[in-house]
Image (cartoon, rainbow, N blue to C red; front, side, top):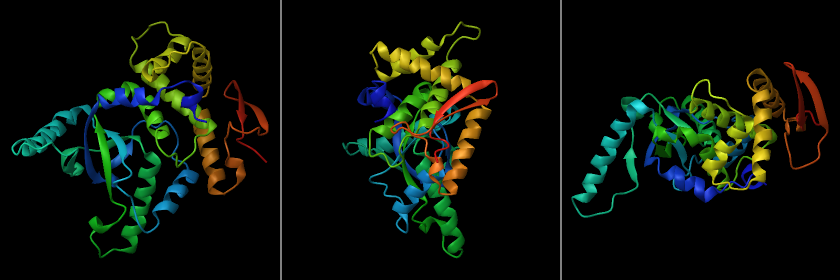
Length: 289
């Protein structure tokens, strides 16, 4: 059961609103992608799961794609390319293909920023490095891990990026399962977006912040406000060093392939309470034995 189900988020509604910020589909080198939404860590366990699927065959671009956004400074450059692409079809009374083709990002932009698909991105980037090392005399363009299909969004999507990223992940087969920590990091990104869109000095409550993603998600259930407000309070309390420590600790346990890495809310694990940075933290599953 996902966070979206518990909180009454409407996936079709979120994706529909997000589509209003979409510019085009294209192909590009995976090496030119960096984190954008960062709603959860690209953990060791998740990367291993993807790597096992792609071993020797690479990325199936017809089935998979990443959602990304381009920086504000480069929106017009991209729109010019899209218009030129569409014009070629219009001259022959054809409907434009949704893919505008291959983008040489290095010659156009600095980078593109991943909204949804960071596990895939990081895994492919690691595989590309290994492939390049093992094939030093072969052009890098022949690597099965290099080219990926992306849906490119206008940066105007950033106000709802965390919500869109979560809905995108839950709208398809979930290759990397949600964990307890993701609920915190996702909410932290929502809080970050809220702060960026509120007037400086304005009086803000956890309830106000809770209603911010609910409006984006088409959630009209009054009882969900309390649920979200509780998440907001916890997310704010754990911001910064505490979350960084949790992420690093789980990564270390996953690297060691121990069940202590499990952070779950579906079972009844041992409960742990500890004092960290002046905040009493209650967590399920970080240190299961």
